[in-house]
Amino acid sequence: MAAKFDITPLNDWGFFHLPPRPCVVAGPCSAESEEQVMETARGLKAIGINVFRAGIWKPRTHPGCFEGAGVPGLKWMQKVRKEYGMRICTEVANERHVFECLKHGVDMVWLGARTTANPFLVQEIAEALRDTDIPVLVKNPVNPDLDLWIGAFERLAAQGVRKLGAIHRGVSSVSKIKYRNLPQWEMAVELRSRYPELPMFADPSHMGGKREYLFELSQRAMDLGLDGLMIESHCNPSCALSDAAQQLTPSALIELLEGLVVRDAVTSDEAFNEKLSRLRAQIDVLDENLIFTLASRMKVSRSIGDLKKENSVAIVQPSRWDEVLDKAAASAAAYGLDTEFIKRIFNTIHEASVAEQNK
Image (cartoon, rainbow, N blue to C red; front, side, top):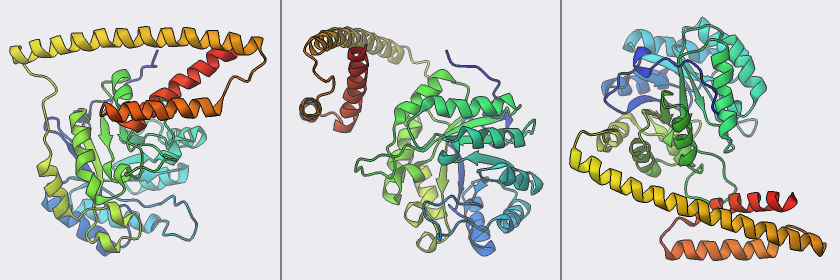
């Protein structure tokens, strides 16, 4: 059972108003110079963006890369708020970052994926934010661990943070995929299922890694009913000091936003609702069949485990499993299904089978 905590509705933050969707947070990956920050903010304000984001401290994979302007960049952010009336936000990764943001009047902060994956850092940040009224967004961890993501919200809520929101940015993948991160939309769907009141944004920039994928990922986020987008925008992306390939100019961003199709979550159309009910009834029957099939498969797995035990044979047979995965992928392709999706399902089933045989 998911632990419950108080969440202030997005409409009460004073940042956004729903409807319409999407609520948008935009700005450069990094605050690089006062000129770059102000020019980007000016372009974003002109297209109706009111919440400006920029990385002040940048956690980079390799040392020697541009790691952010640091505290001086917060002065540039203050200037954005003063001259353009925009809300300002940035990423925090430790207690010192929080104190600097509070001192400089930053309106909102977010926790990055690497920070969310570290409960020690999350606790440190949560305590630094104790009883503040500042909104806090939390990106999902780099690994597909929903409980770790939820745990970050629980730690913040325990310190009195009520303006909480989620950012779904996909997860790291060892497989070669077209996106920078595996979308793993099911994590966002499950989090929303457990906490329907929790505001949720998508981060298509980090999910896609390239400008060419940002529209399709943003549209998918809208199709899933997410509240908004955190998207990277730079006045001159080709000269960006970090993540140049995934940033849009403000003019390209408004083109993307205007192209999105945003559908209502519900409708009063009786004919539609009747058809939807019939289709959902079919889904319910298919789900029952799936559960029955999985139960039958697990029963066979237990029998295989007994047989292996009697004959002192190892539980895991790598060559056999490779054969099963290859066959599943081929079948998936024949039915027009995403092979990576099917492989993830089968790997989960395999883990459960191995656990059952281990008993």
